[in-house]
Amino acid sequence: MFGLVPPDFDLRRSTIDLLTEQAAAFYDYDEKKLFLLDEPALPAETTTLAHELAHALADQHFDLQKYMEDSPENEDENLAHSAVVEGQASWLMLAYELKKAGQPPAPTPEMLKSLVDSGDASTGDFPVLKAAPLYIQQSLLFPYSQGTAFFDAVYRRLGQQAFSGVFTQSPIDTTQILHPDRYLSKEKPTEPALPPVASETKTEEIAEGSVGEFDHRILLKQYAASPRAEQLASRLRGGQFRIVGLGKDKQPVLEYSSQWDSEASAAEFFNSYERVLKSKWKHCDVVVDNRSAFAGLGDNGYFVTRLTGQIVSSIEGLSDVREWQRLSHPAPAAVSARVR
Image (cartoon, rainbow, N blue to C red; front, side):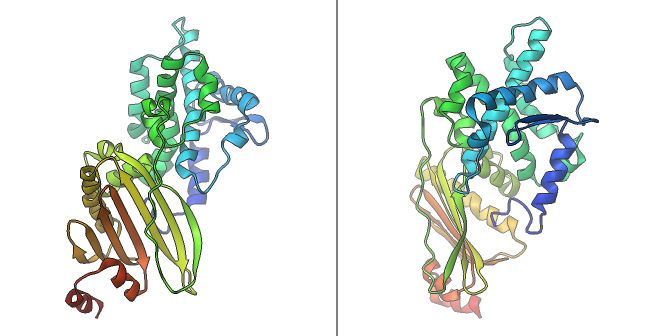
């Protein structure tokens, strides 16, 4: 419903294809076994094994099955945990390569920058990855590129303590991965209240959770074409969403809210989110468009997006015109003209 993948995208099939395309070996923390493919897709088996053995070692000490347990309330935290697991293993793999070459076993800034920069350029050798939506591409690459840079920053501050610290005092969102100083200072995300849908029809909760800096980065890059996507997304202080099913048909409605570090940042994102809505739908009939409200009819129903101080909120997918009118407060003449 955010538009991060097409409505008809086959997530299950795509995930299997993506992972098998790139895998040379993998450690299964459910089975406590390490698997090496007969015909690995990647070269340098010994180096790859160093990465997977790092997972096995971490699992012995910190129970990766428990650490990586998915929770629908913590999508952003789950991605941050993936970045810890893959980032530490990738860092140790680089350190292993350096030590084999007789060099100090700590990745150089140049190596780390090259790894992070490769996130946008590494899809060429993998056609399935290249064809995947931007969000899918980057969510697979993020734990390795940004996770490695994160662990290196923590290691340089804490030394050996970092190896256990990132598991015992885990990062709680992708912001802490992207900005290790916020992890070290224990900065927590806010949880802005969601805009409620006061519908008389019966509602059923379908999903809810967090929307973090990583999600906002991709959303802005994909739809708003914003050159300031990363800079603006870094000003996010917290985001939440909920999807509810309304009526007998359980029409899905998205409730979303984000809090920003200032009213100016919120206003900038409000304007960008307007571009997101216009771009992610084939049809966007705008009825209300001013400095604090943007409302109308999109592909999946009526929508209302609001700016209130440091908060940007949105309700998308309404089928009840009266409920939409109540939420959007448009001028009566404009409403009657559009609704007819």
